[in-house]
Length: 125
Image 1 (cartoon, rainbow, N blue to C red):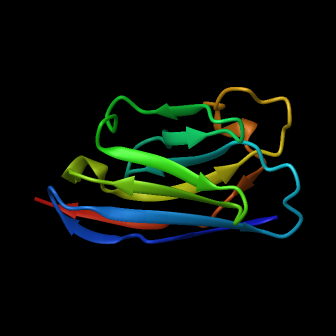
Image 2 (image 1 turned 90 degrees about the vertical axis):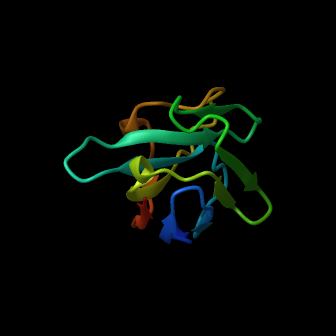
């Protein structure tokens, strides 16, 4: 299974970007699909995630600004980022878990089986 992320780029504060992540390969049973980010010099953090059953989770810092959605038929997950702030600047990674027992979005990175290559988001003030 491979995850490929798209949509990173540059935006000004207050602007919007939309990230996409598409899974390919033997993807039967992809359950949780989640976006993480890692800013320079900081630890990787969960941004937003969703499960096949519809559970979602957001970091407090992005609630009300970011929206995660997914298209299970296309094996894709999206992150709509509005009202961007300079603090959102980071490399964004998508992650997937094929664990069928997951009911809520896993928060620990080691719970994910697959990772995309990362896409850079830069927000200027």
